[in-house]
Length: 555
Image 1: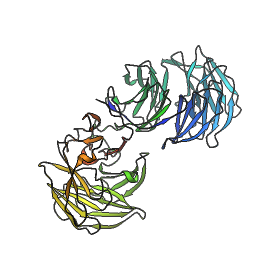
Image 2: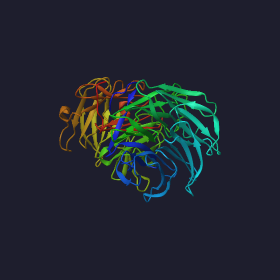
Image 3: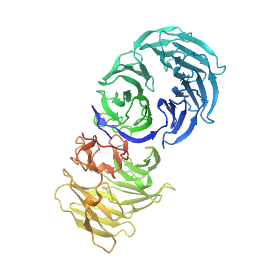
Image 4: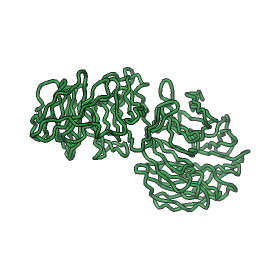
């Protein structure tokens, strides 16, 4: 993670190094295609980043790529003056289209998979019939055609960009006014908006009224590429070696992320999910970015007047060894999340509660164990059968201010005032109790490192205590936290105030390297183990960040 120039910092969760400079990028159905300077097309798995195939039929560099909507076909354009149609399943060339006399800069395929449009350095747009491989018509322009696409609002129309002008053409190749100034255009998924790159300015406009929705300025470099997130809430743009993300759904559109990490010009970028971005750069790398500010920005949303799509998240549990996180919401829906992909693996309906306080849920050996403050009961759910096995009421009647299930599922830690109790999950007996050394509000830390140890934190302070409850026959002992000091540390400011941010600090320098804010973005609803951070939000969203590739810099 590196410092942003105007807003928060983005997390690079993965970098894939290539053997040749990437010039083009396309994404569809978790598959990435990268066109390279050497003429190869590298196919990558978007989830793992691993190389799946290399397509090597072009005689020169590949400048442009686009997948068909079903992801089964790929179109490419090259410096060898040809356009190629590929079968992704076999990796073979279905057809090669000859006709351009100079390099091909841009390609597009129609939604019905019957036509291909291409723009070239020979100042022409060619419309091709896929079945015959012959041109349907050719449009002559005054300069190099740097971009071409089928209009999403009218599939019979073609949009082209030449000499910093954006043109539209009908089914017969006749120009349709008006024209726009710009070097790149992208449409929102529902086609109601479009974004224009023009110098260092990004303008978002309504497709029907042409009214300006938002306008952003990038001070240092001209923008070269832009795109919308799948939910239409975010717009990303590349300028030089930096990528920017803006929230255009907010009442006040604003910059939410700055991605710094590439060392050379970003050739292209694309959203792979509402909170994930992929970019390729002349530095011979593909980077996978995690957008930390959620698309439904909790800090910018009036939660009292907004109809939420999901119930508030009541707990999150990080199980990094198992590669999952577990969340539970107010309606009793428990979900498991894959840490590597951010995708939901499983969703279970458990007994709901009207409790508005924090609980905990953890998946142990195909058994889901969850606890709530309201009843202080331990519920055990069989995930394979989808049924409740048993409910245990063994934790006593005292009001509990915090509950945590240990990392191995052997214990439940309860916080009662200044006392921590440890209860065995096998015998349901109290196996240890200790009084902590600080006055004031406390909470159990999200990092229960193993079955015997637990951390306790103190509101408004970075102080922590670690206690080892050992074996059943031993007394709890305090252990030295400095011996296990993490390079990054989770620090909170105010425990209960939603508008008071928490942050990640570099433990060596004390510098803040990441800020987490918004409704429910507070310590009792955040899990953090030094690599992964999982947060639950009032909006029903779960944020997962991987800090493994984070590079902290002075803010």
